[in-house]
Length: 508
Image 1: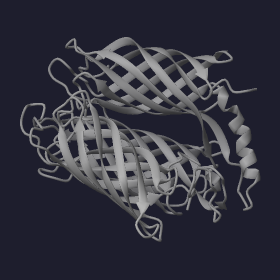
Image 2 (image 1 turned 180 degrees about the vertical axis):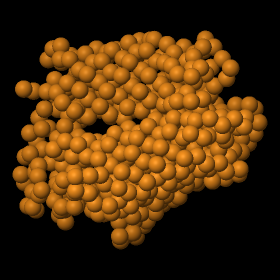
Image 3 (image 1 turned 30 degrees about the horizontal axis):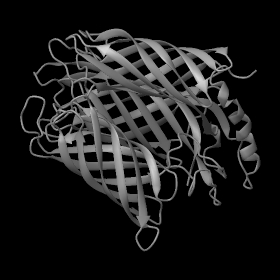
Image 4 (image 1 turned 90 degrees about the horizontal axis):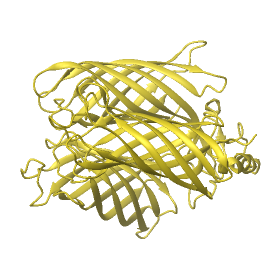
């Protein structure tokens, strides 16, 4: 029976097998295809002060069966004067086929975050719930429709809530992956697998505000150090597009965060490895008392890239950026280390004659408990985090990991963080868990938590159990230590429980 969830994607289930049948290299199994969709929505919301804003949301949903889709989601303020409201979490969605080109959907988003708050605007512990009903019309792989959504920050003393009509726009796609059990084997493939990301770049940079840039309190804006990451997909050797996210790591603007869509082009300088070009980006940002107005940012400037013979690349870019309605205007410089992920090279869909090695990636929904967190007012209490965690095996025992999340329980609504690092893991024990340990660094702030500058670190030891015949579902528990890295440092134990979905993707 043709799946009711994302019916336009059914031909991809057949196509994936046909693609693999052409592979001249030994392969461990078929490249598996699941219907998937990129979905964006626009949600008007009335604040407790009477001011009207709108949240721009983005989700990537993968079909778990013929009715249900699940995936990570992001929401940010894109209208009004509350730039810096961000939440990150997960959406579960059920669909019903109503006609050949019409379907209805019911979804629930659960995430965490917050933003600019006061005595009148409170995000409570940071938990955000957003149930939605929508009706959509399809045209090709695209669909659009109207939605009725209720947005609420229900716990703690949160008072931000409202019900409104909104808009939905989506694109049906396919999620292609190998079974986790195929990890370590070499195959050839004619399309990207996994999340379709060719390169992840870990970056550090600095903003130098121009004269006239002010905080929301009216003081001159100060220089800000930032840390973050960029995900790139290369359309050709020199043209790419992707997503970038960063947060303040120094300069007293802890809590500042930005999430941008980006694209660029570079050209060889006397050879293919040293390349110069340009890049532009636009998206949402704010927090940390930085005046970004409604949250919209734009930036752009020159780039320089050196591709090493071993795979990694060094990126250097600079330019100018600014908010569309706020006073924040700045020059910037950023350095990044790019690590290749996908085996594809050249044009989209062009196979790599040398093939690639299947590596396991896992996406987790994670609940973290910190029993002792100090706030700027001197008070100490427990805080619960909700986070999205991604890990990718780099070898048999070494893996890379990144996590982004916010406070969801306690009194730290609007506290957010982004961390990345490396870990070591053992082989799965016979009939038992796999164990490992990791160390992460990154940026965090907001919600009144005492994080001077914004730089933080976290170390954790963990054990993981696998479920199901395909071993895609995974339960991980961990214990460790969280601490700030600047000024008057503080630390807290951290306990972590995560539910993950694993898949195989190709690596060079």
